[in-house]
Amino acid sequence: MNMRKTILVVAWMVAVVSYAQQLPDSHFEDWSRTYNGDAQLVNWYGSNVSQVGMKFTFMFQKPGRTGSCAYVTDREIGAIGITATGPGYMSLGQPWQYMKGLTIKSATAGTEGGIAWTHRPDTIAVWVKRTGANTDKEDFHILYYSWIGTAKSHQYKNKVGGCTSTERINEESDIRSATNGNECGIDQPVKQVAEGWYRARAKYNDWTLIKVPILYKNDGRPTMCNVIFSAGNYPAFRANDGLYDGNGLYVDDVELIYSSRIDRLTINGTVWKEFNPNSEAVQTVSLTALGVTGDGLRVTGYRGIGTLTNIKGEKARFNGRKLGANEMTVEPGEINGKPWTITVKAEDGSSVHTYRLKIVK
Image 1 (cartoon, rainbow, N blue to C red):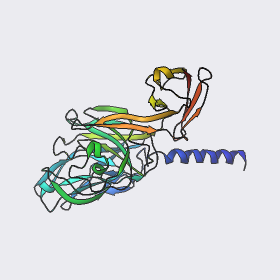
Image 2: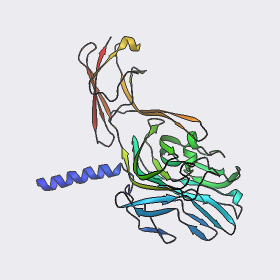
Image 3: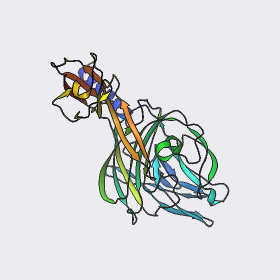
């Protein structure tokens, strides 16, 4: 193989690796589907509504920060005397709505499913604009979550606070049990791995980059993930109010960022609180001050630690995930001598960070 072909093959391999760890159509350029005559993304789904033979579009193609972007908006919709304001959002999963007969009191809705996924990003970054007359009254949402297994339930909270029967697979509220759980009960729970969630009552007239940390419940390797960009009060325990017609969200150029930093370092299971994850200098740790005894030393790194607070004010703690041997390697040094060297690689290979620890008694 000549040099030019070798370079091309290597470049293609790098591109495949990078793409495999990003979300599909992350720049929102493939609008080759349609709904009710409106262009729609192929890999993403809007919270479009079909009601009593009528269709209402909630996701639209707009000029973007680069190329095209997605625009979702809250809308007041109705037919034959049944009207309500619905949340405008888009998702890798499938938004759904259900109403038993023509009884609006039984109406319920949500998001089902996502995409097959095995990666563990550390941040979701996205460019947004937020518009509308009532942005100060309603949260918009940026949400990433991943899980292992298949969730199942047969009932969900409706307009009047009761439970409407409808069977769903991998419904958002059945997965995010700690932050937005199904209040009508979960038949078959799953193991949620991670969640990154940002919500705010804000207006952005210009393109604004928002970076949302992704927190981890455990060390698991997910099998599925979903992402939701919402212009309004969703997901919020199926809120029946707080939605404002015309509040909209422009979304473009979403990126998953993989870190090579350590959030927390432990030595023999004890947290070293003075550890500086941003330092490239030699850091000194005293085993005596740390309360660590014994001959063998185990140095362990963690990432994705934090707390999320839901709309009820309830806090969910995420203890982070332990970095595996393919991400973090430790070259032992000597106590009171040669420093330990810790090398951390980002999961997608995008960066490497080296820490040096001088361990003394």
